[in-house]
Image (cartoon, rainbow, N blue to C red; front, side, top):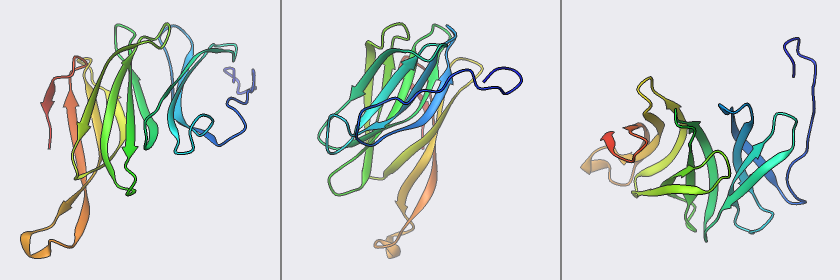
Length: 173
């Protein structure tokens, strides 16, 4: 929309199967990057990242796929212009137990690096934000046992990680 709320363009993106976006940002080059999930290429679902020009045209799109259900949940852009995309992965037992941070070049979507975080207590990362010192703050939920006498009962706890974009965890749970 423009500054008065009038629609400038509208576009359907994706194939004939289920596709959805979870998050989008305006990039520092004046375009849009949206992340979510697509079933167009896999019956289990793939993480999906699409860069859209300010005119509504697709500049590039990437799918991050594996054998499990992957969904791109959130993204941020650092001061150098690279995109950090958070992908939650659900295993065949329907338990989220890992997430991946992918650093992509904004210009073409090519991968700079990726890092897998695996822990059976991780539920999922739900949001990210960029700090004033250009680091990433990740928030989410984790399933943790309450106490040894309550081994069979679990609750969800908040989960917080702060990390540099170079992959060094500054602090974690």
